[in-house]
Length: 340
Image (cartoon, rainbow, N blue to C red):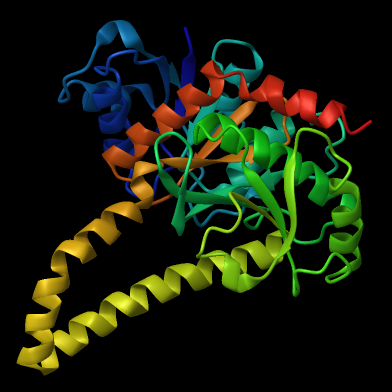
């Protein structure tokens, strides 16, 4: 039975959302065991107003919380009894199989770094993130591709990019049920010799990695098309790409509303398009994915969005459970060890 350690206190929307999401998740068929980590009095009070399966939930007391605006290192130094550290310690001790948090990304990553070990052949860890694409993949027609790093490691070398590719491929194959995910390096040209020194080096090495569906370099225009199921880049570039995609989506929606306000003809046209718009919104709904991984440690961690709703928290728990049940960590370790 999989056990999930949930940091209940770090979310932007507070423990009301994380506890509510866990309560709903506890009633699912095949629900994991859950340890809700946070201020016991608050967590217990919130559980009392939500229907939940008591046999699936227990509470681990952690009286203090790292806020979204806190400086991670200072906060963890000052609060060794905070919820994110306590949750990571439960995983390290074997009392839970996977950590889930919607808290401060820097604090979550640093808590993992202080508690877990790195996997073999991992010099730097990577934060994955999902984004919607035109192309679907896997047995469930998953509309998301994975990009890593998404802001954790700003400067990388060829070794880092190779490790990111191996870890991302293993994650996509398990979570998206895509048995042979296509992996690409993000570069300024599709030719093997294009890109930074790190990209050129990684391209050369990835072509020799067995059991990896490496398709070479890809350009920025290929990102929304879904040319690759796993996009590998440095954290500086990855973060910019994700923010640009978010901005484009928001701008398109605002322009549509503006056009509808200005013209009855446009409003009528938008009405005809509404079924397609709703289908697009459903396909690009990040909450259905729940969370994204921090990869490179010898324990599993799923980072949920800070603004996660109860639904998103529940889906992050679902992703974490799948990662543990499909032995994602063993698959990643095997792939990394094969690099020699």
